[in-house]
Every structure is written in structure tokens, then in C-alpha cells.
Amino acid sequence: QVQLVESGGGSVQAGGSQRLSCLASGSISPINTMGWYRQAPGKQRELVAVITSGGSTNHADSVKGRFTISRDNAKNTVSLQMNSLKPEDTAVYYCYYLAATIRYLEVWGQGTLVTVSS
Figure 1 (cartoon, rainbow, N blue to C red):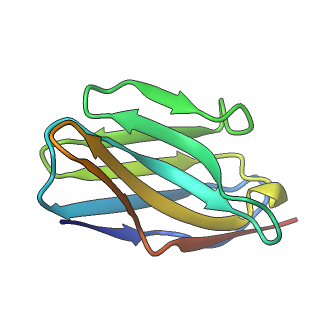
Figure 2 (figure 1 turned 180 degrees about the vertical axis):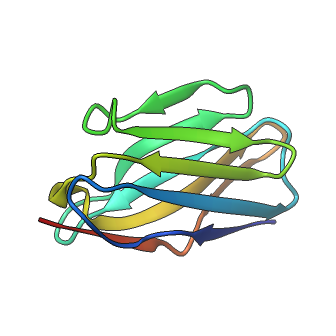
């Protein structure tokens, strides 16, 4: 199994920055995708950014140019640098892990709240 532990989050004013990190432990597949999703109150969970173990990234249009995802494969960590935060970025952010080589495994973190005040 794989476990995800998130850190970061909290409250910040609009225009500010925050960094989220997620540490994966357990039976980590060398080929995997990790990333971040978010869920705002009353809304569906949505993709923020994902990154493959090969380094390919995909960022949601709403965060392009403001958020940057990165990972350290040696440390099994994925980070999300969030700049120029807006009130509409307020949400619970969930770390995500997906491996689908030998067997399919999808894991979610417990979530961390990011609140952006205007």
C-alpha cells in the first residue's frame, strides 16, 4: 500500500504565496503520477496539477502561470508552489498518487485547507 502525508496550507491574503508538500511512503511504484486536486465548498473536486515520475506536468488553466508542481523522486515527494493566490483558490487541497503498471492503485491524501482572504 501507499500512504500520503500532506503539509503546508493555512490562511494567506490574496496575492500571497504558499507551498504544499506531500510525502509518499510504502510500496511506491517507480512509474507513477502524483499531483494535487482541490475541492471548494459546494463544488466538485478538480484537478490542480499533476506530474509523472518522468517529469511531465499538467496544470489546470485556472492556475497556469501562478502554480508550479514539482517532485523529488528520490524522496518520494511532490510539491505545489502557489503564487499570486486569489480568493477563488480557497479549497481543500488533496495529494494524489496513481500507479497503473503492474496493478492499478489510486491513493488520496487526507487534504489540507488553503484559505485565501481578500
